[in-house]
Length: 305
Image (cartoon, rainbow, N blue to C red; front, side):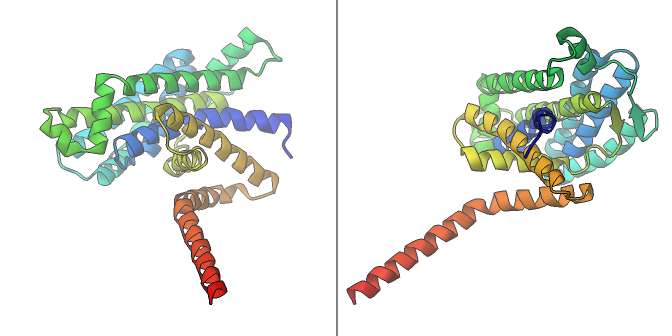
């Protein structure tokens, strides 16, 4: 069904987009905040990374992209915590403003090509050799490092405060913990991870486009929910690994759709359907279980009569 090239491509993209899934895990699941900055932060990471790579600094482009993403998260958090703007609206406002910022970073051009530019992937290929799967190794290492650092951070005192803020903000305030600070730190980290995903993708495909981040929230949520549905909601490690696995599975679903000659224009619709089905899966399972119990009870009642 899948060729070796298709499998490698799905793994590469799955690991890259897994950073978005982990970012949404932090904002949606841990902080319990609907952060809509994701699309703009992803494109911002693409723009910063591409601009740095074209200038001859592909490795520097990754931390710079993370700093830019953290700045976007800070703006969203500032609107939400200091100006009392609702979380969804704060993300939308930041996302709208980032469109112009992203254009400015790319020199007011909608596309930055990098066909002859050195990237982290070309450097890895030169180091590992032509025959080595260097791209999937680089993507896997970056994602694994981000995953380990995120879980380690959530186990620290600050990380525990962020988790408590998402669970019960009133209790956290009563404990004299500054929820404004914890929300700000959480959103900065989440958007830094999203921007890192965009930065890696830009160097992976050797181009940055102003529309690359469109629909990224849906893609990230699809990956996150697929992982949670298949692997359950255990501890932090289980949730983080589930987000990565869900991203990889999602890319295989997309690859399968493309193999079935589904037009590429329909992929966003497929993503939306996947998210809807994944979210509705627990309710559908509960409804099916209720119908089975009712049918069993009716059958037992009829046999006794």
